[in-house]
Amino acid sequence: KAGVTQTPRYLIKTRGQQVTLSCSPISGHRSVSWYQQTPGQGLQFLFEYFSETQRNKGNFPGRFSGRQFSNSRSEMNVSTLELGDSALYLCASIGGTGELFFGEGSRLTVL
Amino acid sequence: GEDVEQSLFLSVREGDSSVINCTYTDSSSTYLYWYKQEPGAGLQLLTYIFSNMDMKQDQRLTVLLNKKDKHLSLRIADTQTGDSAIYFCAEKVIFGTGTRLQVFP
Image (cartoon, rainbow over all chains, first blue to last red; front, side, top):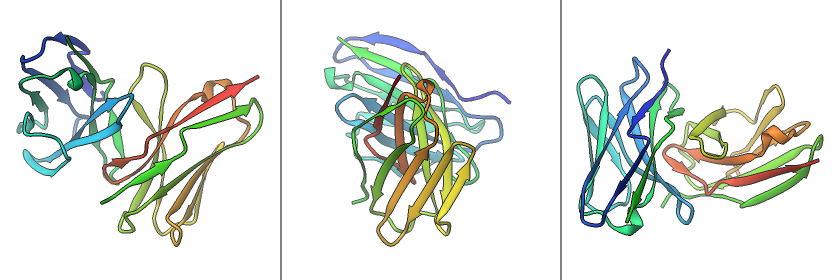
């Protein structure tokens, strides 16, 4: 059974640009969640999707958005990038008892 | 709001037991989870406990849950250098800050 796949693994952007990250959950899983991980703030919840609907949202500005497709793949987008957006972005596929299966993450560096 | 708290660091000698503690605020959680993150890697589910249980044992791992005090702990028996990592406690979508476990010979 394939795990959670996140692309790209690494990317470098400059301030003001926008970025789109992709996540393919475990086959059969219909829920995904996204997290931002930084040394200073730890692991912060961004949003959760189930069957193409956003079910929960963390405390992030509107520059952070996401969506889920009918095949359960999910994308998150960050517009007007700021230096503070540099982080590891983790996607997780959600199992039947709420346990999370994480991908390796997309490491974003904003210059 | 919901919050999960953990101590930041723990250092133990190889072969000793490690105990990582966590407190949480949301008493409606059905499950509570422990995750492990090794350097440069994503998080890996270690174990979880149903909120109606007091204890769960899984090989070297023992999870204790005190629902009255909203306290969760993870005990690692016979700690090895390969256990060096960051351990996160989580309830629903909220994660603790993580406890960095360092195992020295």
